Image (cartoon, rainbow, N blue to C red; front, side, top):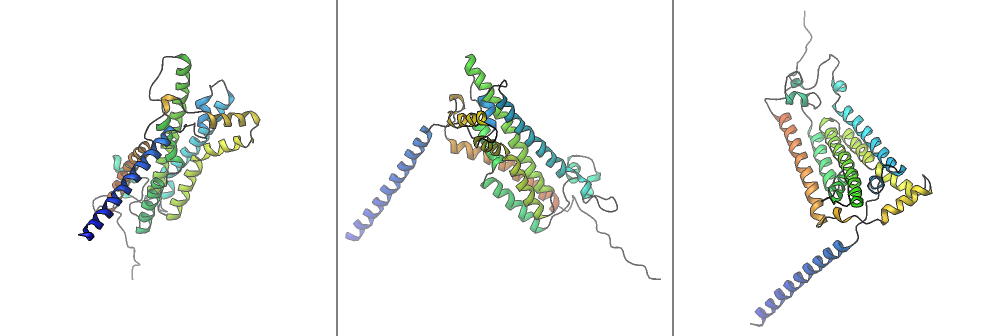
Length: 289
């Protein structure tokens, strides 16, 4: 009887401890939601807080243009099949000569990959989404800051349009960087190329943060340094504040990750299929006279 009472007391103590822990987590989340959310420290925030009449707006736009040019160059490099053509003018993937969507993929994607390459591809994409880098962070921030409503007041409406433009440019850059990262994964046949190209994409996506850090250190003059301090001290407007930040983060990353792995599975399915992307090996022997 005493042993049973002791067990019940232990179970009750564990239940109370779990309830207290849940209450503590809920209180922490509520306190986190009450904290003042300021603009993110990057060059896109310059465009959100300054009109086109201000030079700092165009500085942020210049960084965006540099990122887009570099990413487009990487996309062209990944989809250019000239380096995949052999010495006799043949393409690695035999379906490249056919018509249709599959032939377009066959022109830039190898007909088959080794187990090491596939393991590197899957691991790289898992790391890309689980340990989100600047590319995915830009997508999340764009969705988070995107205006949820528009006001008829002139001043508020102007700031909403600036935040809208900034969010759209941030989203375009983040999506293009993610697409580029996926392309360099599926088009590369060397694990070293996959890792190096991933590093290059992350470097390009981080340029907006690097530009902000340089301005904050005063490398571009005291006026721009004050603008950087203003960004860090300016709270997000009411139309850009989203509740459940963790849920927004998980949903945004999850949607992009699901679409990416569906595409990767589609590619691996073509490569493993017996009906598509089959390269016929020819054995050339020496004739005996």
